[in-house]
Amino acid sequence: GRQEFKNDTLSSLLGGRNLISIEDCIKASKFSKKGDDGDNDDGVIAERVVFIDASWYHRGGRDGRQEFKNGPRIKGAKYIDMDDIATTKELFPNLNPKGLPHMLPPKELFAATMDALSITNNDHIIIYGKGGCIFTPRTWFLFRSLGHDPSKVHLMQGSLEDYIKEGGDADYEHTDDLVEAKTLDLDGEFSYKARDAMFVVDMDGMKEALEDEEKDPLTSPLILDPRGTTFANGHIPGAIHVRYASIHKPDDTLQIKSREELEEIFQTAGVDVQTDRQILCTCGTGVSVCHLVLALEECGRNVMDGKTLIYDGSWAEWGFDPDTPKAVSK
Image (cartoon, rainbow, N blue to C red; front, top):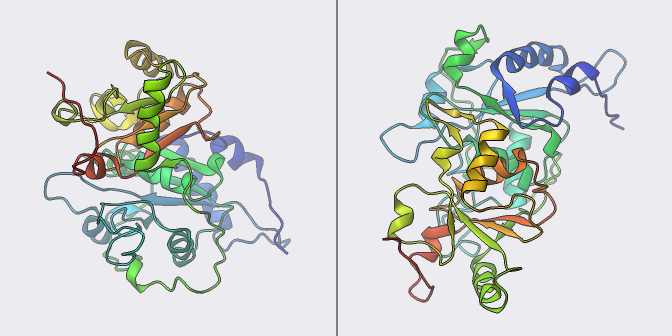
């Protein structure tokens, strides 16, 4: 059977940290080459690092998938397309009859994707994006939600361009070696062990939270919304506005602010990060909410205990349902 090989060098470099500097990412990339075949000479499974390009753009004409194909990309990196590795109406009409965008995938699709990318449950995952990309935390959340060891899911602080500039190895040639959901067999046995998405709440759960607030506003869940200007035009009643743009550094969308700065942001918004109350995070389409979960954890909240959830349907579902209550800001 497989034995787990814990190497102190890799574990101390990455272990348990969400945010990894470019310098440490480059060190990890050199280290991972030693275990590329997955085995050491003594037959013990080596820990590896797999870089995931999660470049995705919510506006403008950029196509993260095509840019990954064209290169450059971190040497040996894989690409995950959040619009494709998702519960799409096209592939899963019964699971997403409303056709909501980039809903978290079923566990079978995630496991099949991991197998197709040769990723194991034991691998350290470092997620990165190209300059101009913002929403890599969504892919960080995807891995954790679907069951990857949270101490082995990391975000690179800075862009692909920064990585190359600081001496990281890159591939420049064209590749078509990408996963596409519709080509995967979801009925077989999978090597990767995934679970149904966790840390999520649906529309009924959000409605219950509003009912709880009417009964007892001091113990009911807090609702946080990180959208930008669209928040004012319509949001779930009672939602506290904590903009995602305040969580990353103003001059670099791929670097998260320091713990002290994040704590001040939540404090200013009147949010106690250590509250025993549930914190439910909602946004436009379930993407920028992941900045909130990341920031809450960076401030010391235990976001793995089931009390910090994202509403995956978010405003794309709530805002277009004629029967849901809605609030606007003046």
